Amino acid sequence: MLNDSSNAPAGAQATASHWTGTHLCPCGTGKAYAECCGPHHAGQAAGHPEALMRARYSAYVRKLSDYLLATWHPSTRPPSLDLADRPGLRTHWLGLQVISQRTIDTQRAEVAFIARVRVGGGPAQRLAERSRFLKEDGCWYYVDGEIGPK
Ligand SMILES: [Zn+2]
Image 1 (cartoon, protein in one colour):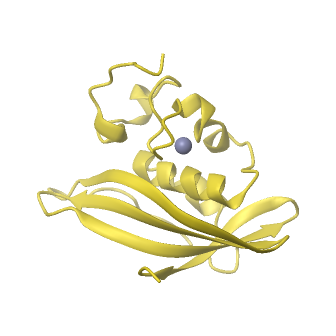
Image 2 (tube, helix red, strand yellow; image 1 turned 90 degrees about the vertical axis):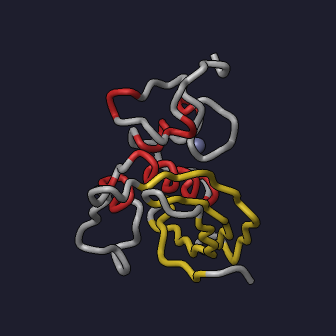
């Protein structure tokens, strides 16, 4: 079932109605969506920061702004998130690479990653970020990120 020959590369063409659990997860683990980020998008808390980071990337791919807002720490959460593509400027998420993660203490961690994205007909861009995560009441939240590799 992992060999489901989807014609949508990494979810680029997918909309909610096209998604089934057998799609490869857009976050690049090689697992089926239903065994990777899918359960988190359905409400299961991510058990560790890297899982949350991956689920948030997949949520950007799937334009799940509610999930992104729900996992954003209230201190830094934007009031709303508009992930709609501008006319002619469709966002194609091309892949995610988790570079490293660092546990600071039981409630704080950082995950460094590189995401590649292409907007409209433009060149692929590389977005490098070191994200900070905070655990509160047993749940991990994204706090903020530092752009660029270190
Ligand atoms: Zn995933």
